[in-house]
Image 1 (tube, rainbow, N blue to C red):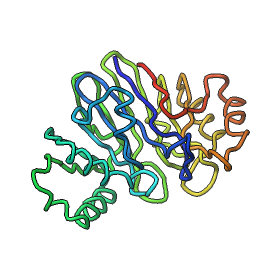
Image 2: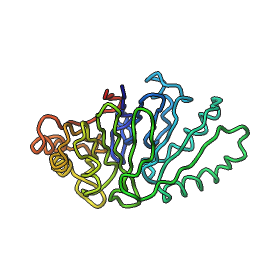
Image 3: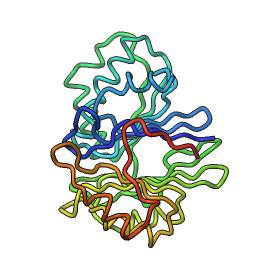
Length: 250
């Protein structure tokens, strides 16, 4: 059994009830955190997850609403005595900048820091980033303002989960989402580097996805009533908005 929990659902401007988009995936002995715009330790505690159990961190791209919490996340785990290794994945554009950021904090001078490995992902489409006993996770570069990856998770039992991350409508996401049981697609709006809920719904139909979960949509004072309506007019009732701490079992 695998679980995916939405830790944050909002687009770039977060609210008290909707943090910036990030999530955590659990299957077998692997727990994969996807982005860290804020420190996720408190939410992980609510889920009954020990920080030591997080094995992997995927940084989809180097925008503040996706990566700004990583230094605090790493520091807090170190202060709590973490010993287990962590692998951090991302395109070179993101990891070069993240390593520079950590160097600015002089983290190499922090004593007895747990092992952290930075693994740079190629821009190759459907690259096998993580191959585990119970799932394979593939990444593809999508079409955002800066280099960004979306992903596809294929479970050993045959279920498929796909995540667009921040992107304009593109064929790379269409292929990641092909026949997915759950497609999580951004819905910030139809502007440069992003997608509207209507566009996401049309792509989900073309990909033959079974369910469409909209994420990274405007919240709070910027929320739009049309976000969900536009998607459901195209895709039907199996399109919905994700909320913080919503969990999917696959």
